[in-house]
Length: 265
Image (tube, rainbow, N blue to C red; front, side):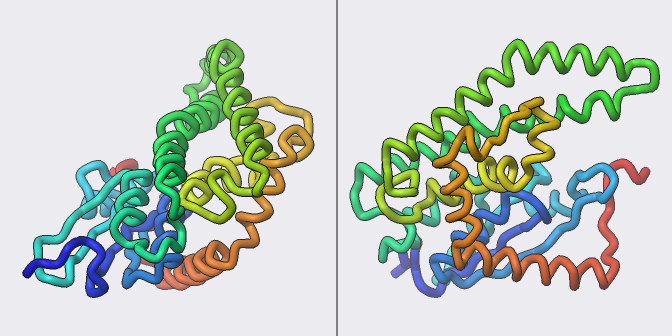
């Protein structure tokens, strides 16, 4: 008889791009104590783009991608999109509720945050980042125009939306009162939000100031988010996977691997 998803003999292969959203999937795999291996890919140090070898993992050439190798011999399953991958793992591989809440309504809350982080928050921050570097990469003679255009776009829409979302996140934590986004323990909501909130913002305050032009101290503006970020930073599993990947990437760089990038031709 074929086993259902969640069989203890199932294995996982994570396609991992350095300094990417794949870190959250690794965190979850480790927290659930699943049997996984990681294929590491390095960004181009000049363009910060991933190598074309990532297309071997998925037609989009993006990371994270997760292969599920079923222990009963069924054809493997390939998963893309961070929120969907996390939703799948929580649904089928957390029967002991290590990360997933026990309460069904709180599980729905987690599902919401898995979609919110990627669908509402991340694209705003990506646009602010792109707009902040546009003036540097624009052709000579057009840098001033690029600066005026991106500043107008930011002031007209993106900064308002970013501040609206930051205040929303701050208010949710204040209202919940437990230090977590859902319930009273670490859940997939905290893990999915760790990248856009902690790593992109509170662990990158100078970069954020350049992107959004905010001169005030974000830690004072959003004290509950700042406290939550300290919790994320000190989470034992988060620290473990970060240290592990730092060492793995350093070892890989020392081997001088040959990755191919689009702009090399």
